[in-house]
Image (cartoon, rainbow, N blue to C red; front, top):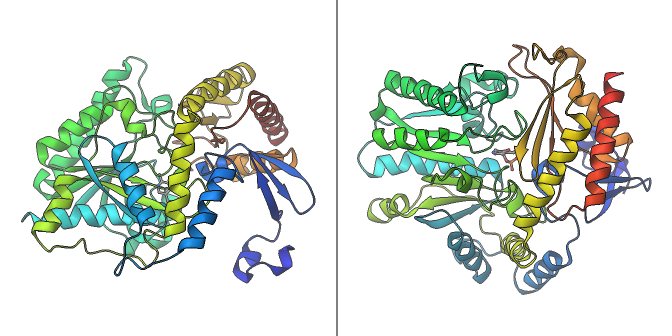
Length: 444
Ligand code: PMP
């Protein structure tokens, strides 16, 4: 296929992009025969790499049986098997998986589930959400409303729900020199407590947060105790905790769910991206039994639905991804290769004059770039350094996920790395080598 034959709207947007024709393992090949190491898993999606034979076989087998059966008429064996599998490995108390087609849909469903829960239990006055400034929860209106990315929200402002945004856990920029990590976490919890008090705890539906922030801020990890403090605070006010693990979940940080490392169990959790590994669009909300039970006792139905939810081929792909991850011990591989990636980044870029911070967990790593390391001053956003790095990386056969700095100077440009869990040592060498070259070329 040439660019001329692609979808018109797509062509209009992307005239200059190469055309991907095949993918195997960590490599994507374009129509000119150029190869790219997929060091970002697309957008932290391709956890098993491309063309994995076991996933393809499972999808082929399912499509031969049945591809699609609308959920108002049927469930399928494969959807039930996937739900069982996810629940068997979910945090304590989660009893149901609600399937959708992607991350934004999962967030929309979780927001509505939370709202409906309070209506069902006779607390309809709860109408506010609290979320965080550096966050991305998706591009549909509800998900955009809880998201904190000003650039994406700006034109849609009057249509978005009224959401209160508080500070994310952004140690590199916000932790004071005289504070321990724990004290910093406590300060953030206090800020949240003040926001809750202003709204009235009895009026708040949920606090929504990415366990590890991905797209907007490059793998921001929570300080120890912060999310536990958030959980306790939510419990004191009867507020639900929704953790969005669309990007950081499904093994990406080295445990199946990132919240396992925090010792925190959410009421609702959204997953997508690595769930289908890129083989099919799929997302899910994992929900606590007590929430789902209220629907059974009250209206009897969660008031939400999409045409393709529980799509059988998507479920087959996702189930196969989980089976391969367990069979090949890929969570351990993710932790091991993640350490290897972090060490290489530290060695090669740790002293770089324009690398402000290296952070992340597992194979979810962020690099924040700054003009001045001492003052942490970002580059002028007009330079679009992140876009230059992406371009320079692509010319060197490397895919990385870039994000711009903010005009208010609250963050610098950054690059996110999220390679498949099957990435080899040699791939890691090449990724860091090409990335370092791309950064220098972009800065030249
Ligand atoms: N939540 C998070 C944390 C995300 O990173 C994303 C996508 N980057 C979404 C939600 C939205 O997912 P999708 O693009 O599949 O709608």
